[in-house]
Length: 289
Image (cartoon, rainbow, N blue to C red):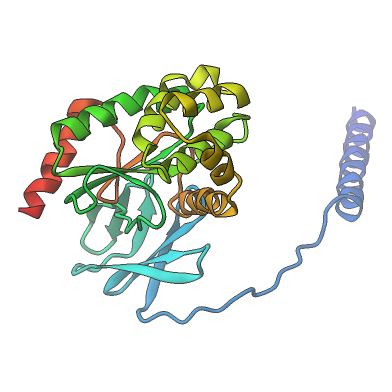
């Protein structure tokens, strides 16, 4: 019996030794050393206590003693500040990036802050549909071959009809790579704007988003009454391509992930129904008054 136990112990010892030897071999052969370096040091105006990073990796919320600093990782600067009166020890960000959760160990308190980004969107060289000085601007990032954009565009038209003096529409062109004729349609629309036919051709292009190609785009330009020689010349104008490029860069800066993306006086829109958009407009008009 003793010999049996001894043999069992020796066998177990050999198995463990072999396992440890395997681990040692793995460590040498497959595990890499961590190489690191300090990329940057940023001086802050307040004492940092904790940090939360947005899901897209673009924004850091730095919990400090007196403020929450909003730091743009892309631009490498503090872009805004949220003052706080209470003392908090930790910060977390909701998955949708719209709520900050602040906790304090001593007071056993949880505070929830709603975070809304309001963008200062410049008109730039974009054509404006409606009154230029309207108190409410709808900025829409659209793609002329996008079915969802085509679905929302009539709703935007209804809003312009309901608020003819108070609302204007500014389209920022955001042609997706998956749509081969979207950029050509954007160029056609911008070319039409030089002949004061931007609303007309935009409506036709959106209504026929399924049928867009080189021939049909030219056909729709003729249908809205454009001078075709001027149209062809303007479609080749490099300045129009720059407008589209600027719109695309603006969309990326504003974290536009898909189209349609709507903003009412700089506030992002989630519910694109007529009633929800009307309510947002009414709210902005009350502020204006």
